[in-house]
Length: 244
Image (cartoon, rainbow, N blue to C red; front, side, top):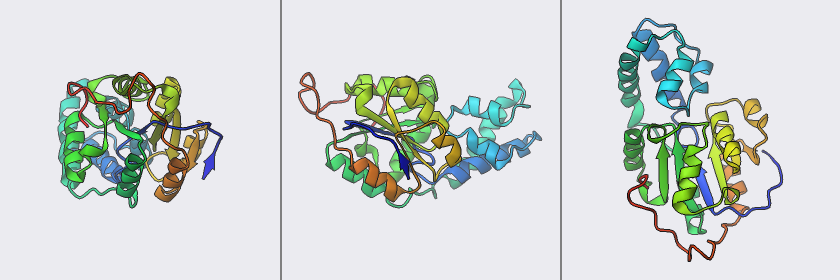
C-alpha cells in the first residue's frame, strides 16, 4: 500500500462499482471481446478491453474496437448485453466489501456510487446485492457526462451538500482518479480491479491499496466529517435525483 498525507476527515465516500465493489472485471472484458467476435470485428486484447471499464458504454466501444462503424453500434450493444447478462447474476462482491460498507455507514459517513454502468444495470445490481439502503445517492454514465468528466461527483456533492474537500472517490481505474482530480476531491486507487497498479500510482492518489483489507484500514483511519451548520446534521436526498 502506498499513500500520501491527507488532513481528513471525509464526510462522503464515493465508490465505483465494477472492479471496486464487485468482482466483475473479467465478465465485462469477455463480453466486449465476444461481442467484437460476433460482429466479425477485430477482437481487442484483454488489456485493451479492461482499460475501457468505467467509461460510458459508447465511448468504451469506440476505444476498445476503433474499427467499428456507426451502423454496427446498436448490434454491438445488443451482443454486449447478451454476453454480460449471462454472467451478471453470478457476480459477487469482493470479500470484505459488505462489512466495509456497513462499518463506514455505522461511523456516519455518507456513501454514494459513481459508475460507468447504465441506470438499469445499477438498479439490477443494487437489487442483487441488497445494498440499496447503504447509498445516499448514485450516479450512472447514461445520466450525464461519463468519467473522467467530474459531473458525477459534482452532482452527488450538490445533492448531498458536501464540499469536494470532504469527499473521497474509491475506484480501480485511471478514469476514477482523473474524475476526482478534476473535481478537487481525493481518491483512493484499488489495484485488484481493471487498471494496472503503475498507471494508478502515476496519478498520485491519496492512497493506492492492494486489497479490501488495506482499503478498510485506510478508510477507517479517516473519521467522518461532521455536517456543516447549514445541514443541521442528516441529509435527506432529493427523491427526484439518483436512486440510493
